[in-house]
Length: 197
Ligand code: HEC
Ligand code: HEC
Image 1 (spheres, protein in one colour):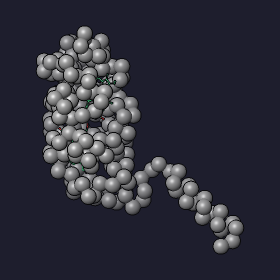
Image 2 (cartoon, helix red, strand yellow):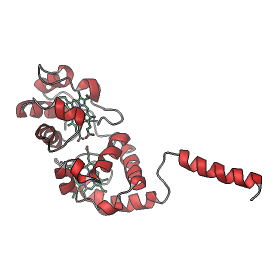
Image 3 (cartoon, rainbow, N blue to C red):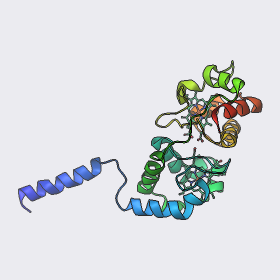
Image 4 (cartoon, rainbow, N blue to C red):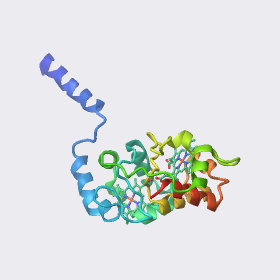
């Protein structure tokens, strides 16, 4: 190999490594999985029509990616989620997960429609003596950021169930578990009503 050819080859390899986009072969695999699996529960673009199945459209890519990674290792995460989804574990690899997360994050987000519970708004914005304000992490419009999920416009039944799952330790995520520890079921319902659709 001549010097120029060799440096070209090195450049291609390095360039390939530097791109954070999904690896090419993962795209068809992710599309096939969406069509044959995800779509039946989460809807065509992730805008799930079912109260207990979360909307994925416009959810933050980093959060989606982290959640899907955690579903690959059921013992670390909510057994309930894994059970309900029945994900074909062998088909999820890093490239497929990245492609799925990028696809759903790029879909038009679920609507922002806050304010259907005054009690819920108070908890979200100011917290209580036992529960911290959600807004400090999830954002003024509950849009989330990076690893923090968007909540505005999510199905309220799904949100309430997740809050209960965190407080019972059925879903484990350090910041949430300790924050909702002292939340009563009534408070969980109020804040889910405030946030959700
Ligand atoms: C059989 C129905 C079903 C199928 C198929 C399914 N899901 Fe789910 N999914 C669910 C349910 C139900 C939940 C909520 C789990 C819970 O309550 O803990 C969920 C949760 C999720 C979450 C977490 C969302 C959040 O807000 O935390 C992601 C991400 C996700 N699914 C992506 C996918 C992808 C990608 C596929 C296809 C590879 C898929 N799901 C296939 C039903 C399904
Ligand atoms: C210290 C930052 C922080 C605070 C404060 C916080 N959260 Fe979270 N929340 C997170 C993170 C990070 C996650 C993602 C957890 C994971 O990766 O599973 C999350 C996840 C969630 C989820 C799951 C969403 C989904 O799609 O499954 C809900 C619901 C939620 N938070 C509601 C709340 C509410 C209500 C409050 C206020 C009582 C609150 N959070 C306070 C950081 C925070």
